[in-house]
Length: 334
Image (cartoon, rainbow, N blue to C red; front, side, top):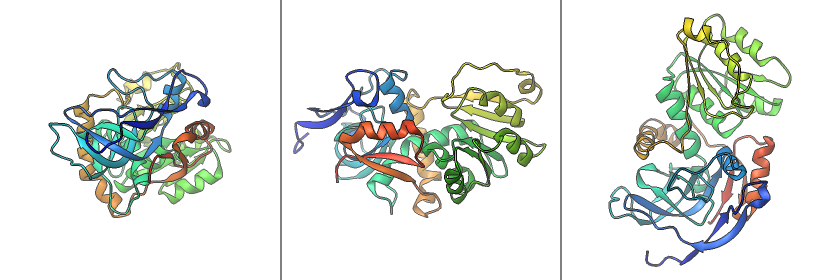
């Protein structure tokens, strides 16, 4: 890798625990494999799985970098021997198996996407984790279509705002839950048709009333706990519930008779452990179906706050507080 430094700064995770266990260290650059690219990182996204990994409840898959960070944007500076889709100098954003909290990061070439025109590198870095997750779960697995009623919990999160915008862009009627009125107003601004503040009203009863007898066709949930049973009650005939996290716990008690009688589907997934070829297919689908909407300004990234790399602990504290609206980012380089 000519003309590159021998070392880089990165956030080390020497132990699991509170945000302050993360430390800024210096170490060697990662080396791209045959089908990888090496990216000089401009910005990296901060996501809930990063927090879970730091706490010890979300281990990296075999072969992945132990460094935190699942999405980046920056400049390609080296490519593997089999890569012909990107070259040095290209600006990309990428879904990474790990390693994003660093000045240089390796990513599979087929998991990279061009930086949409009109976006900064920081905005581009906020896209991959959320857009890959929402597309594969809501559109691939749960087959959301125009005219469907769609509910996403946590509407002001990165996942939530992505889901609201994508579902609306593809013709769904969008429902969401939030924790305060500021978040409610923002979600409406981003396209949600029905927004319920779960701290001020019974979101289940309100959703049930607004959805009518037909119910909700697709639900994307990150909460878990007692939301699971309520979600299933809200689902329409042949409705689909996709579980992607369990902020309130994964052990629940359910009466599944209606799932049987109404031919409902309860599914779940994680993104990080999916095979590379599946992630490549998601990237291709996003490039064809979603990137044009971003370029046209119909879908916009929402960046709440930008921290410097050495402020990763502060970024995690904000993430854990759930006080933010949109994405939390680490600015690594200009």
